[in-house]
Image (cartoon, rainbow, N blue to C red):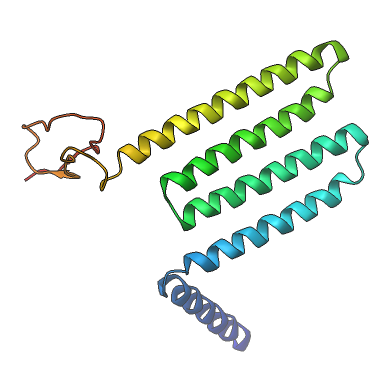
Length: 178
């Protein structure tokens, strides 16, 4: 009986601690960013150690995948810290560069006569992705609330029977029943 009461007390204390942690202040974005970057670096180092046992060509691919994952995680953390058109653009470019790195390493594993074509396709995909990212950046910069030249559609539209004028800077309207 004494053991059961001790276990119940421990569970109650743990539940209370978790409840306090969940209800407490929201985490500081800068601290979360630093933790995410450190975690990404630690995961990269661990992957690097696992890659050491691979043969030369597989080692290069393994390291490329680990490095690409690190870059992506850091770019994602940057967007969470400073969500802006420029950081989202950088995230898209990092995504494209990471994909290029991994794809080029995969091309090296192919037959010699396929490598050139594979690399050319990888570079074309990278250029297309970077171009798309640049276009998205331009659109996002044009359509931020402070830069929009026309009135922006309200986020909440009270009367759903009247449709607001559509334009490229409009945000999607949400209807609520009145």
